[in-house]
Image (cartoon, rainbow, N blue to C red; front, side, top):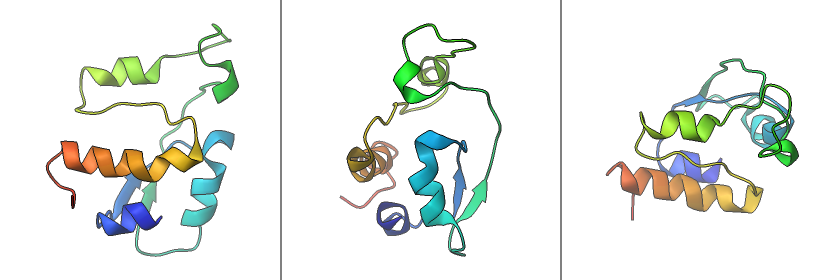
Length: 94
């Protein structure tokens, strides 16, 4: 939340699910960031790369249409990754 607010994010598209529960818990009830919830059937992060049922390489799919696509595997990395995204977009504070 701190990283998003530092970058003045006011709209967030986010996939709900167990892998992002901490993020959605932090977003719940706050009013500064509007959350738009697309839907999907992606499997849990521990199954990524195991050809699990209906597994989709979402990072691979979006890499060709975005400037930065990454799978966040650790909550501790999220702030750094958000900062990098904004710097690559030329929008972030350095």
